[in-house]
Length: 373
Image (cartoon, rainbow, N blue to C red; front, side, top):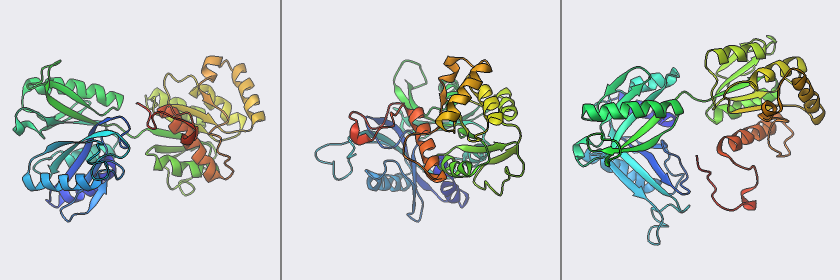
């Protein structure tokens, strides 16, 4: 929902009702993941996507239907001989879409959720998408780390969902959970989609260089909250990195250690060291490679620089196991030359590391295109 939030709030604030369609479950090679959202405004304009084009027209009609009826609906789209060229998923996957009318009356917490997302405060939204009692479909509860707003219709159901939603929020996962009609565990009848709105993952770029400027653009495009850090104030300025969320003047290793001490580094964090200077590289890598959890650590440099850096890190006490976390030289082999091309190669390696991709041309592989989470 994050990518269509501004458009949705625009309708919500003017008192209108938008049709909101959300991917809640996928099977096989569906093109969008749970949480992908498309909205249809009262004037018919569209924002977002749920399938990359395969079923958008059918979902557009579905969104309009739920606004007209005032009743939320769960709809499955899959491939078949009859519908492959109409509303089927030509990629061969299956996707479950939950469509609902969203307005001030149906979703009073929306603006608060938007404020929390903007302030990087985690929130999970649990919505009933299937229930024996149609009146319960569309009910929701908003769960934060400490507060709760809304209800799914019973104290028992609320207690079960709140506990599970907090667990999913901590893991940054969005998924469908099944319960009995009144929230009984290990039973069926009620399905609840939990959308986790965790803070954006972080990309920490050390080294205020032209390569860093290009990587800021890539990181922002991929949805990262990007920080550029350099000890040299003449280079580390907001004017040089207008796309960064934050520009910090500090020694890289000191800044990284401080962020880790505040529990602001997690297994989604990407650390990119582009300083290309041993007095900066070695201390910050020494700190990064010993973090208990981090998503990616990459460092720029030639083969000769890499060998020298590895020797220095070993002298500093970094083990071979810890060195195994390091991507050096940084990026995939794309033949990149310019800062912009290099940034693409770095982004490609981060994506491959996150999802388990091999970095090969898809034409040279077989099996699933989209890797399992």
